[in-house]
Every structure is written in structure tokens, then in C-alpha cells.
Amino acid sequence: MRDIAKEAENVIKALIVKKPHYNKKLQKMEMKDELKLKTNQIRKFLTAVNAITNKVNVYKAKHLDATELPDELAGEIQFLKVKAAYQVGKERGNSVKDFMEQSKMKHRIEEIGTSISKYEEFAHYVEALVAYHKFYGGND
Image (tube, rainbow, N blue to C red; front, top):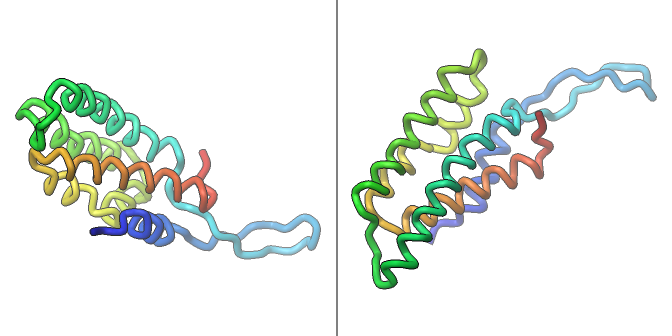
């Protein structure tokens, strides 16, 4: 089984850059770790994933033995690639693009297909990305 928490942590660590920062106490410039990606950029994607997760949970409650998603829900999951592309396209820098590439987001979405368990793993992965982003100092 994949260690999605470790994978998510490694993605976020790869987005850390060294930036010059003036230390007032020492009155000198220092290099400080900073995440390239802002919290709101990653949270918007999590919000979209959470909306789908709610629909998946409702479907599972109505279809207790189901292991596959209906085409409509599977299509909504695949549409996350469009939302990701939009986030990349509207940004001036490369932080969202780097995040999407590092996290292999497009590939992870594609491999879900109609599998409920693969979707749930994906949703946990996105949650882990947000959690490690916060842990490593992500902010607006």
C-alpha cells in the first residue's frame, strides 16, 4: 500500500525555496525557507475535492456494496483536471504548476477511473498535501 502521507510530505518539501529575509534582531540578511505555493491556491483545489467526496459518501450510503462509481461522479472527478489547469493558467508564476507537477495530480486523477477506493485514497492524498503545506509554513 502507498504511503500517501510520506508522498505528500515530499511534494511539499520540494516546493520549499530559500529566500533572503532581514533579521531585525541581528540586523543582517539571512536565508529563510519559504513555500512557493500560497494556502489559498491549494485550498481551492481541496474545496473541489471535498465537494466530490460528499457526493461519493452519499452514493456509498445508498449503495452499500458498491465498489465502482457511476459515470456521472467519475466524470466530475476527471473534471478536477480542468480545475487544476485553470489554477495553473491563472497564476503569473510557476508555484501552482510546480505543485501540480510535483504531486502528479493529473496522473493521480486519471488513475481513479470509477474506483471508489482509488478516489478515497486520492482525497486523503489531497488532504495530506494541505496538512503538510500548513505544517511547513504555508500561508497566504
